[in-house]
Amino acid sequence: MAFRQSEDDAQEGATPVTMHHANVAKIIPSLPLEIRWPPFRLRHYAGFWVPEVTTLKIGVPNVHSRFQPRPTDVFLASYPKSGTTWLKALAFATLKRSTHPPCDDDHPLRHCGPHDCVKFLEIGMNTGNEFDALPPPRVLATHLPYSLLPNSITGGGGGRGCGAIVELCSLAKLRDMEVNRNGSTRMGIKNESFFRMGVAGDWSNHMTPEMAQRLDKIVEDALQGTGFTFASTA
Image (tube, rainbow, N blue to C red; front, side, top):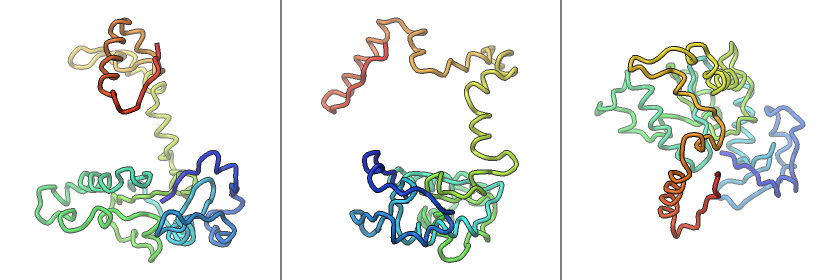
């Protein structure tokens, strides 16, 4: 688990990364300490507050030095307290539905918690590499920031990295592909109609001012008393 440091705190006591993450245990005593998140002692490292023992001292070095990713691995990367338990259950049930039908009385989720079915990468490496025996596709979770993951994961050899996926699925890339600029679906809808400009404010090219005011009124009524307000984008 890791918490991003605020900009104000980052300017005070920030610790630059001057060594390989696998050797971070050596500098832990010199890192800023935070004890207001019991039972975790947090250390500030590379712009994040990270649990001192389970993650920074043991987890990160082990992930960098020993974890061997597979092309079929699925990583659930999430912030703490953002719905990770639910995400684990949904992902596990979906990916394992051929071997464990959801209606099966013996489904693992009926006997084990989501955190037992989908282990955290940085914690599972603490007691040996328990992931080696898992059949593909392995579902693994992590609270580690992207910048603290090893290149073996983020690099995604053979063009399978996050960058390649982002480029392939970017609005500009998909919109400019020949197959999406021409032709129609079986229902006669032009393929190009599924791709908008991809910029904020494009609604003004499709809605009248009266339509926008009506929607603004609906939102204002729904948020009344909450303290939330939204500036007009007209």
